[in-house]
Amino acid sequence: MKTIRTLKIALPLLVVIFLIGSSFTIAPLKWEHLGTRTVNYKLDRDVIKVTAKDGRFKKLKLKVTNGSLNMHRVVVQYGNGEKQVIAIKKNFAKGGTTRLIDLKRNKRIIRDITFFYDTKNLSRKRAKVHVFGKH
Image (cartoon, rainbow, N blue to C red; front, top):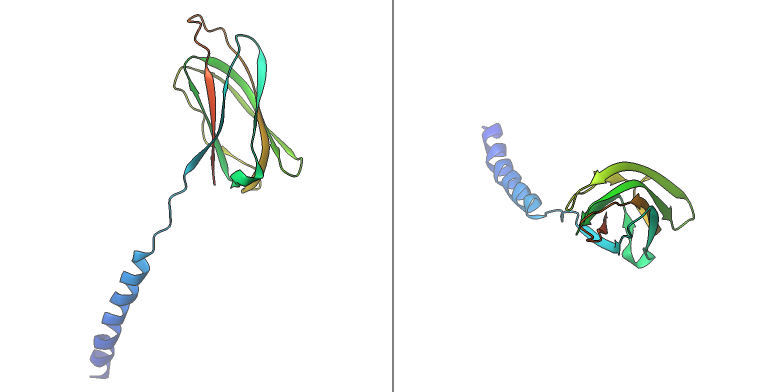
């Protein structure tokens, strides 16, 4: 008898707690565009400056548009002066993207991102490299 009375009180209470808890959703992590560079027709490097106002990032992703290029590596310089060298070594066709790049020690302020590449694009369309960060 006591158990049935307890269930009659506890069950509606659990349903209310579940409904309230499920109404809170965690906002999905969004990719933020950190910058774009149009590449040259040779072995070269380009730098994208990122400011502290852009925030702290966990991951990076690069996308290549307009043309193709051979990416060699990316160097991320953090706000504290520390650097992370990421070997990419991939030939990107127009529209290609990198894998998700995890930044060491998770959420980091980025000062700049330098990417090293070469291109032998015969179409004469200069590729653009877009860099995105995920908070």
